[in-house]
Structure formats: C-alpha cells, structure tokens
Image (cartoon, rainbow over all chains, first blue to last red; front, top):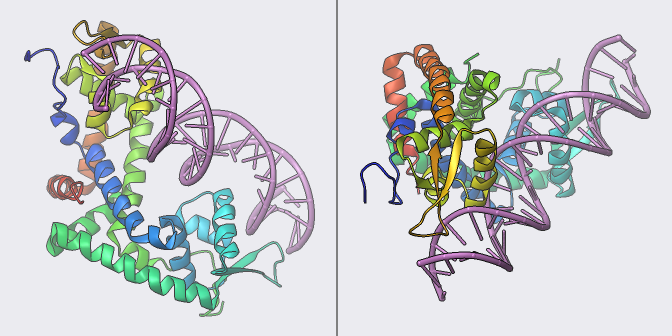
Length: 151
Length: 151
DNA sequence: TATTGTTATACTCTATAACTATA
DNA sequence: TATAGTTATAGAGTATAACAATA
C-alpha cells in the first residue's frame, strides 16, 4: 500500500481523537449502549428511566417541570408519559388548583419497576466506574458537570 | 409549597446528576451545541466536518472505510458524501483496481473550506479547554478515550 | 459467496408552530 | 395575554434489509 493513497481499511484518526468533541461523543455512545443493554430486558429506554427516577424523587411534578428539568422539549414529554402510563407505571393526575396541569405520580407497580431498573442501573454505574477506576470516575463526573454549563 | 408534593418548577435531580450516564449526556449536548454554533455560519454539520477531516488525513479512503472508522453505518455515509460532493468539496473516484469502491478525495475548494472549518473548530476546542482548565481537559480526554472502549 | 455503494423502510429524536383549555 | 398539554410536521440520526455491480 502506498503511504500517500489510503488503500487500507484502518484510517488515521489521530487528529479527531485528540479533540474533546470527538472523544465525548464516542464515550457517550459507549455508555449509552451499556445502559441500553442493562434495560432492554425490561423494555425501558434511558429517557423513560430518567423520567421514572425524577418522578420518584419529585412526586407530583408536572410534565412541563419534568421536561424543563430533563432538558427535553415539552412536546417530546407527551409520548414518553403516554407509554409509561399505558404500561401502568405512572398516573397523570389533573391538578385541582390548575386544571391545565397534569401531575405525574408513580403507581405501586411503577415503584416496583423502578426498583428493578435501579438494580440494573447501579450495576451499569459500577461497571463504568470500575472500568475506568473510581478515582477517574470522580474526576470525570466533576469535569463533565462543569462542562455541561458551557454557554 | 408542600415538602412532599412537587408544586415548584425546580426539581431535585441530585440522583441522576450523580451518575456518569446523565452527566456525560448533558456535557455532550453542551459541547455539540458549541460545535454547531461554530459551524452554522458555514452550514456544515459535525459529521460533515469529521468526514472532511478524516479524508484530509486519509486521502482516497473508501466510503466503507470512512463509515467504519467514524462509527456510522454504511448507508448513512451515502447522503453525507452526496451533500459534500454536491457542494464541490469532495470527489468520488471509482477505484480502477476494485470498481465497486469509490475513493473520496478533497477538492482544492474542499481544502480551503476545511481550512476555514479548522479555524472555527480550534476556537471551539480552545473555548472548551479554557472553560474547564487545561489540566482538567487533559484528564477528561484521557478518561473519555478509555471509556469509549467499554464493551 | 462476499463486499461496496446504494435504495428503501421504519423508528427515534429534535425543533417548531399552532391548537385547546384553562388561567 | 400567557401557560400546560397536546397535535402536527419536518428534519436529522439510527438501524436493517435487500439489491446491483463487482470481486
């Protein structure tokens, strides 16, 4: 193979690999794949899990508050809650003080489902942390949290 | 407001925020938004930039090799190269030794475009690195690169 | 048989605009 | 008028299957 013409399969990506943007995208895909693997037996997506977890910690949160907190658009919340409600894990409750608003609550089945999901998710989290080492994991979380505030 | 019912807008997401999965997703969105902002004047997406950069470093790489290296599906590569070719920044050249294969080359206009993009991208990279600090940036890149290898 | 580029399909996500019902 | 939930739509990304040309 010639050194100037690229005839081989393996490409030189050393420039892209030296950038934060490429590295974070690649790592995010790997982590996301691991989460999917942890949840797919229970047929739950990462977004559904984040809603269940947020509702568990904030019972009665409105759809708008959940959307704003989780960083998804309000319209996107509708089918997500629809599927969770169809599955019987959350309930929409019309707020008597503001009948435009639906407050979201976990059902007892939802609590049981979340317990199962938490077991899988904690396994995933331990897998990630032991893969990179606990000290790196703590650094990573701290730097990522700062980076998320980039304007 | 009651302490048990969630009537306010700001939710407690302390659990999700303590996880690598949530933090990396949030940070990736912030970085991606910054890259988009850097490129949108030139009407180029992050994927288009990654292809141009990979072709610059690997002239004559095939579509299949680019797809494999950049971690996108082969069919996804077709419209990406289509738009870059329609724009006149890359050329598809049928390989005379294997006429199934199209080797991708930057045009001279493509080289000029990539030069402009590199200026913007380097500004973005400096912005990210100075936002978190150069020492954190080096740690971050190293940990993310390791994490991307998670099975 | 296997592979490259391609087409087609379906599903998800993202982003907007606009509607309804309420306030 | 403004907001919550919803509907609708369009664009982008992801994942597969399959086909034609070629190996």
